[in-house]
Length: 182
View 1 (tube, helix red, strand yellow):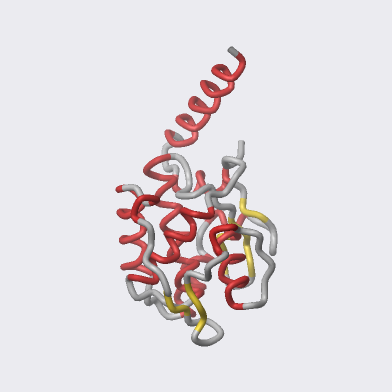
View 2 (cartoon, rainbow, N blue to C red):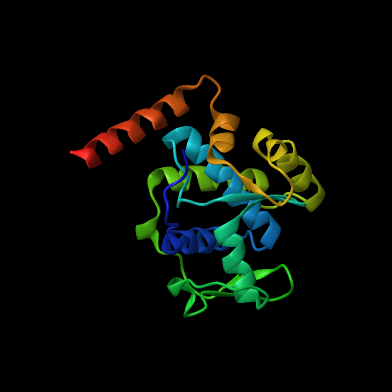
């Protein structure tokens, strides 16, 4: 079982801009807000907000697409996303980001707002040391090898206290496979 194949970069960009519009302008905080919001999104819906993949890096779990987008705009990354052709934000310093455009509300659902706002409250201004500690304590991060991908199953397991989310995902997957076969 894995995430849907194509990341929705337009939605990822809207989420980054939404977070920036709420005063979370530090790159590390922004990335952790996405991580924790996505875990809540998985708990509530069975999937991530925009089909993101996560990696277990030294300073904690990182949403790879969002991180690639930020590095590209900062000038030290390679990224091939059409949604970044007109730079929607810029860096005022190595880790501080300034939005140059508004987020597109059409890309965000009610559940996205709930998860993002909760995560912003908890992690948006958390000091770096606490942020690293909080994210390093997550079971999905602990299960992954250093610098390796965190499996979707580990993300689900970290928020699925009774197995109901995994059962739901398996059921939806089986129905989808059956529908494609018809």
